[in-house]
Image (cartoon, rainbow, N blue to C red):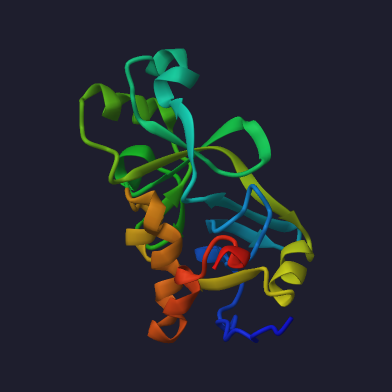
Length: 193
C-alpha cells in the first residue's frame, strides 16, 4: 500500500495560555477526535483547557437548582473532573474572572452570573460553561505536540465563542491559511474514500 505524506501545519506558535489546540485530522481518540481546545493555563505543572466543540446533554438548569429556569447549554470541557463546572466569558465588569486574552475571561462569580440570567440578558454570545476540563501533566502536552497530535494557533474570539460548533474545527484549521484547507476535507475514515 502506498502512503501519501500530507503537508501539515508547523507548530510555530508557542504553547501558552490563550492558544488553541487543534486536533490533527486522524486523531482516533474518541474524546478528542477533531476537537479544538482553548488553553486557559500552561505552566511548569501542566496545562488546562476546554474543548470548544462538544456539547453536553445538560443545561445550566439541569445541574444547579438555583439556576433551574436557565436553559444555557453546557459544553464538555474534557474528561478530567467531570463533576466540576467552569466558565469562560466576555463580561468581566459583571462576572469578574481571570483574563486569559484581551476580552476573554476564565472563572468569576456565579452569583453575578445568576443575576445576569435573572435579568433575562442574552448571554449565549458571551458565556461558555463547561463540565470538566482537558488537562495534561508537565511535559505531557509538549510530547503530544512533538508527535503532531495537536496544532497550535492563536485563539480569535469568534472561534472561542462560536455558536456553530460543528464548524469550529474547520474554522480553526482555516487559521493556517488556504494551503491547509484540504485537511478539513479529509474523510473521517480515509479507507472509505
